[in-house]
Image (cartoon, rainbow, N blue to C red; front, side, top):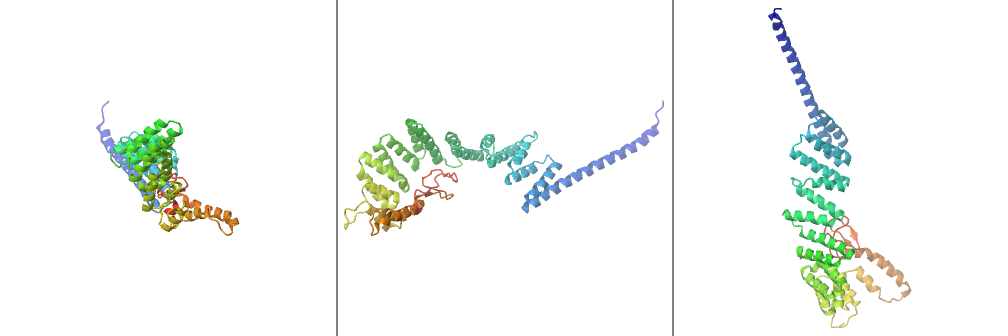
Length: 389
């Protein structure tokens, strides 16, 4: 059978027309999709700027459906879910990103960091810990370590907190020596509770070496020495501390008084407390003085004052409802039968004044905290009662 060239002449134009139509259809479809994705994206941005988060989420979801390979839209959507408190949806978005094989290393690290933030905000600390540990060696390493440190401190896992704080200290971004000393003191407290006094003493010695200017390691060391019957050593520890941290004296004035009595060194303690009281009057220092049988001053007109006269001397220095109430407790009045009722009212009024207050968040407590239970800040409590602030 002979080949007819006329069919070739007919088929070539037909093929050309069909190819042209197919390419036009693909271009139109591509243009349509490209118009749809930016339109949904910019509509979402507009909703977001107008604080219409529900509509913004719907628009971003539409944009992601039109172009599922757009990483930035996934990140924006995940952040929106997290801000709205929809943590499960944020987790799904970021886990979907991490499951993609074509994700760049930079975007993978970014998605891992976002996933860790989702778990943190949701309060899933164990899952947040695992996610943050995967950021070691990335550009988010320092931020991840800070988050891990906060997790371990909140959950009172002091050994792990100490390891992370040491890494942060070695990175030379900031000094964490005082914080590391706190971690050692917390571990020492646990050892004391478990009856391991030698182990506690070893940890406290490390804390003192790490932060010699910090008051807590020395105070805890002196308390442990008193517990072990080493009153003279405890007294020497606190006398040395009074030189390096005199402003913290109200926190350890009572321990200093107890150590002085046990070591028969009342005279030294009396002189030290009187000197420091003159420099910075405090109700705690005053009562330590009075427990030793002294007062802030002894005038020529009254060479042998009674301990209760210390409250009058304190009132001369500064107005104090606490000092006034405690002085009145020992007085006798014309209508003595009403004194107990009046005294109870005064004691009730002064009780809040004897609290300590966090300077960071305002949390108040009768106990002094080195680590605020309210805001988790360290050393945020001034060493003075609320009345003296």
